[in-house]
Image 1: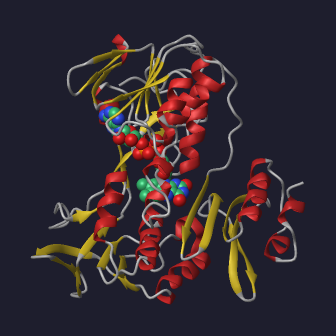
Image 2: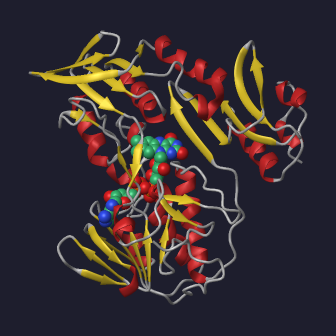
Length: 415
Ligand SMILES: Cc1cc2nc3c(=O)[nH]c(=O)nc-3n(C[C@H](O)[C@H](O)[C@H](O)COP(=O)(O)OP(=O)(O)OC[C@H]3O[C@@H](n4cnc5c(N)ncnc54)[C@H](O)[C@@H]3O)c2cc1C
């Protein structure tokens, strides 16, 4: 295994041919950014699903039927032609960084000066009896959402295992479609690491308010009984459902990197410019995990904006441009008519400050011992989170009393 490439390696340059493996947001962002930075070399993206499309609507607008397949596309065929980005439909079976080549499952070899791994992740299956039943649903690809849509009718009993971001969003959409939803999670409340306990409790309580049955428990088996499924919990409780969806996170797709001898540790290891341990290979998005120049192995991010930003980093590193300034990690989620946003970390060492409106928690902040803001999450407070992000990125000291005061506009603190 090679160590992560050194930071002073020469950039491939604007004429290098680039093969991007994976047409999710991260892979597409590399291509789009290369072209907008004036890259003149060939750019190809290969993916079994063809044209690049966006995943967040799969658990929201697309599941609800508010947008169609065309509405999911990140770029259509005309855009790709105009920007000379070639889309190849296929699955890469092997990468050979030394030879500058990727080989498709059908044996076709594709040569390139630079390979970009943008392979995303695979929905985790539950390692319990019945967890691998082919009727147990997951939600990662457009086809998964199509399959889920066909079973979601008024009155369908849907059991969702995992009440994290995707489980909660799907529960909300399924309820809106008239399904009878049971949401199962071992944690009460879930999502504490993302939004802190106060907001997590408020968000979790909304499920019950919307008519969803919330169950705290650990599934032990899933059995199929004709048209139905039965989930047995460790507590002895049994849940019968017409359909079961598992939303318990993803496993990063690192197999190509591993078999090519790249450094992998819970993700494909990259430096802050998305360079892997081989000088010809970059990795971006959900499959990549950053080790900082200081040697800190960061948590792998699985959010939309990270996919986009890491694509931008890789593109500028490939052409030899300056690194875009790093920003605190940001995510959003929508459920039950509310919009949730989070930035930075709510689990880093420090203390939590809560802002309430009419006795209800609306924002959570994490502040370190020196008064620097580390993280913030809000329900229906997108502008305030934007300001909080500026405060974090600019390392502005904050007064916890002001953070807690709903009369204080965070924008003023960000100046
Ligand atoms: C249902 C859903 C809802 C979400 N909602 C939100 C949200 O509200 N907010 C938020 O911040 N984030 C959200 N996310 C997360 C966000 O969408 C992901 O972080 C982002 O899509 C990651 O992009 P990616 O390009 O790294 O990976 P992916 O989008 O997974 O793309 C990877 C691509 O690689 C391809 N691939 C894999 N292996 C190969 C191979 N061997 N050869 C060729 N191609 C290959 C796959 O087919 C896939 O198209 C959501 C994700 C999902 C699934």
